Length: 377
Image (cartoon, rainbow, N blue to C red; front, side):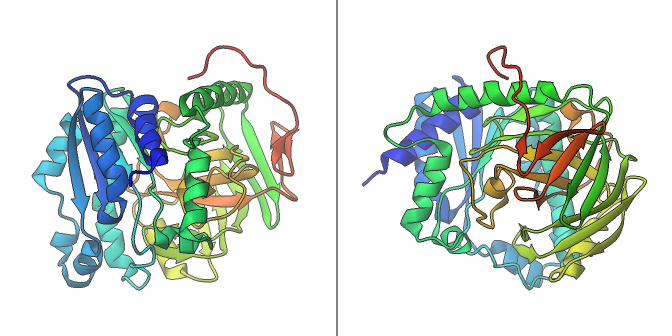
């Protein structure tokens, strides 16, 4: 029996997020575990007159490659992948997995080689996204593995995911996300002209220069669910220390209690209570991987719990996240890297953020409301 929430989800993604039009070629990337949503996305794309192409992967291929592949094989990108990256009009990535911990014991250096090649293609797609040549959205279909990470039953997790996306039967998801877009756009405009942020919290006192960098709303076009505002910091302008209380599961491996110290924009010390070798390997990916590519406020207060999935966790209302590695062209970045790794700082209880010395955020909320105008991004 088809779940009407999945049908509504597919309609939201192909309509609001991607805006698919007749004749556009759209690729749908997913593991086998996301098949129900893949099917509905295929149907929804056809209904909009688009030309869908499905890339459905069996689980376990990465484990085989990392265990048995040569360095050349780890870094291999097919010619078909390159051509599609350059020519397709739209792309949907489903990050669902049947085993979110499958790569926990993978060799950090071999994983770094594989990820470097992968992110070169991701970065090229982001160049096309920034130029308005490619529509892309990443999301997740609920599976038992993700439900277990979130410490929920599958039914509870489905309710959580579909509720966060506003695709339940009594909801108009497009109306909701258009309203979110308007609010986030106003909040981003309120930060225009800020030269420096100072982030203060448990074991955290970090200064981040954002002078001249535009703030942008993340309103459901590139992620679903969504709910943040972000920019790319000035590359040489990060100083101080920060503690990330939430664990980070990055590409199948978990790192806990990350502490970073920055000087002149670069990480000069990194430690973690678990996954420290992986942490340091990722920071050493390339010249740009020790530099911040993003600083962002999580503003989706409907996401109020940690689920061990960055799609949801980076939007938790009252948190901030910072990303090591490549930044965003539309946010003025000059930092290029094969890495983009989001880490979450929980500021909901004791956190404060100052903009050019003025307190603007306390205990997980901005202290003033933004001026609302316009119709959103």
